[in-house]
Length: 124
Image 1 (cartoon, rainbow, N blue to C red):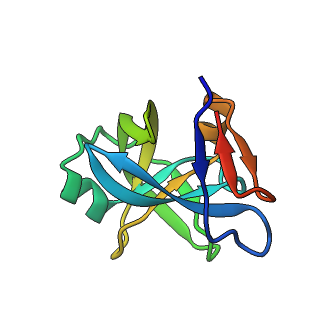
Image 2 (cartoon, helix red, strand yellow):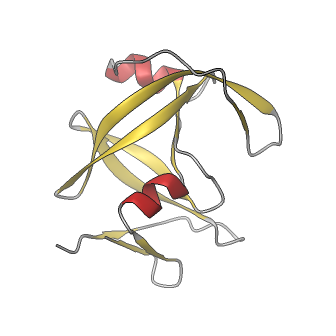
């Protein structure tokens, strides 16, 4: 099955785009970032959607602004919907004041997604 999702707001470096996904049926803006090795969600999103968190493994990530952030928890096998496709993903939870969901290369590789910056399209 091929799912095509239109993307918008391609960044200048052609490494990240924004799209809309659904978690628990609730639409949410997500960033697909080929420069990120892992997928991340912020704590306000986890709380709003009442996602189940597991114990953290003590790891840290380097944020876009080059600061180190503690991974405070992990959401295992979170169910995301992109158009009619349901996919699961592990999300590292970080503390932040704003709502953010970032899908990194772990997700892109797992589902063999083809991200076309030129056509602003995601296919998998």
